[in-house]
Length: 422
Ligand SMILES: Nc1ncnc2c1ncn2[C@@H]1O[C@H](COP(=O)(O)OP(=O)(O)OP(=O)(O)O)[C@@H](O)[C@H]1O
Ligand SMILES: [Mg+2]
Image (cartoon, rainbow, N blue to C red; front, side, top):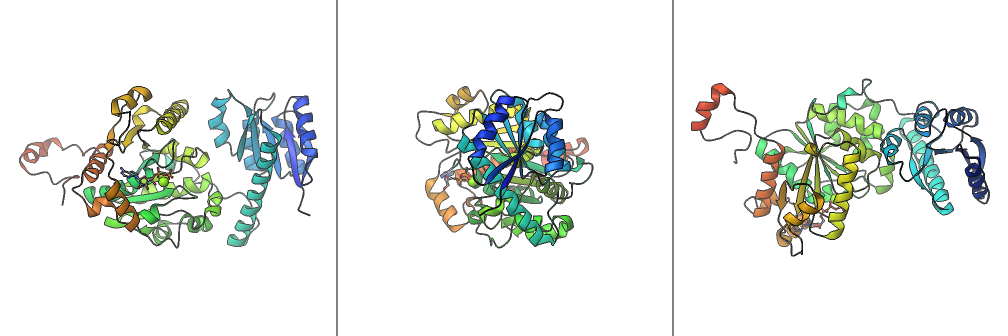
């Protein structure tokens, strides 16, 4: 018989508390150990009862659910929180995600959804605990906080972070991110990192034919001793000197990566590299939101299909509600010449957002490049698709202004600067 999952329910509406209690009473592996009528009571009860899961409403008197979740994350980290919010509380989404909640249920939700969510969070917590015990030889506890001021992850302080995102999968994020990173290193001779944050099913390793015997999990196993030398060791060498941080070697390890790990890793990467290209998955979970928030540019990839355009529209709307300035968003149209009833203009009109770059469809070259793990920008630098990638490099990194004193001579000399081709 498995252990009982002890659940604490926090909600200010007595009938909701009642209903949830009744619903959970039918589950043989779940036991409601207590209830709270507001965030303050919730925190007090959690300290007393040490539940395995806290179900937390958002809008409550005295202390709201978000604040209570923040307190629990600090003070009772062994009691993970599932937030229950109603639609229309979207403004809370960002804060809720940042407060440390593990999952979100949008009311009204079904009993099956609730129970699945409780079991999932519980199992993940168990897995984390045994992982931490195995790797550090210590009891599980909160991972030490990111560099204390939390400021070192701020935008613009060090290397630039370019975050690749799409609302729809399969539109070409990974392919473009990998080729862009290689092209950027070749064109600028700068220090370029490529980070695969599609943590479960990332394929940067395959796209660049890299040895995937280590990845981000090796960093988090040793997060408290992580220094730049160690990061360099874990990153894999790619073409033109780029360094690649690969995904965990197995998908189930992806859940072990936390926002705090990401903060700490990026804080170091910014010090080590000039440019950090990040590939991602479409899921807008807390890790993607963290990088989105701090990225210097968010490169949104879309294509000429209704699902891709629809999801890009949704993504742009979410960015807007997260106060991500349009200046930071670079919209790319991939397979821009594919046969479609849409074109650049109609996509721009629909999204009400300018397309900054277009990447052509080149099925033959791309499939060869992907299957061999050779980026096309290195094997076919003169193909149109490679030229468009180089243009994108130029857009993301505008050439440094020429100092006034040099301007005259620079006009006469052939450009050998940032974008001189070899
Ligand atoms: N410009 C292009 N021309 C031809 N084929 C392309 C082009 N861009 C992408 N593809 C093909 O589309 C497929 C999906 O690309 P990719 O894996 O980069 O997408 P993704 O957005 O990263 O997907 P996911 O969300 O699943 O990670 C690849 O197999 C690639 O071969
Ligand atoms: Mg991908």
